[in-house]
Length: 331
Image (cartoon, rainbow, N blue to C red; front, side, top):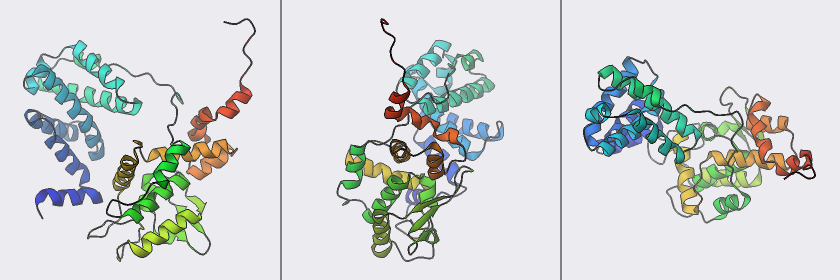
């Protein structure tokens, strides 16, 4: 097996070394002339800024996009491109990037830009005024709307034929868990054989983000999909986790691999959405069915009711009930 395939297999499992592997692979995908500078930037983040490996991978991904765009526009080397960069250029790039990306991506890009420009200033080929030129972001709590799958999209994703892929039974079981219970990728990844009580008809998902364990009733559709995967497709191994890799070593699927399974399924069904949209759809369905916020928070594993307050904005029926009448004569 060649080195590239070996690295791919290690990356799929996710080990403590995975962030370093991601950093190296992301730099390799950057423009060739920018790779040495990006490598120095990654080292600077670790040695000077003392950032955690996972934070470095996050900042590096956005920084690579920024640096490649700057050098491509200038048509010269990285150092010369940033020596000639103006505050207007910095602001213009961020505005163009923001038009095509959501608030989360904008925050990541802003943090990465400021860090890279600080790095460039420390090297003497960029001025401190460029750092201040990165636009600030104003956001308001609960200002966005959760983007869940519509009923038609959910029907398409779960009802389309499951042929294709290396483990269609495994993929189907994963999608049914996400759609039925609104859990996170990490909770599906962490699900163990002992978490399913077949005779009692219950399933429990581990706590996530300092939340609470989630107990659910095992629905017939989920029970059938899990049973068929365990009987006919799951490799015989000593791993306690339900969802494992295709090939040896039979380790559990990492959260990122769960995302890949969902992404491939969505692409085949023509529904370009992420796995988290199942969670939004689950919460929205509960709200429309009349469930109180406390019950929704418990089923989502949240410790605080504030975490589910945003879903009230998509409950149009209840919003209409509290909406005041438009004053007569108002234009």
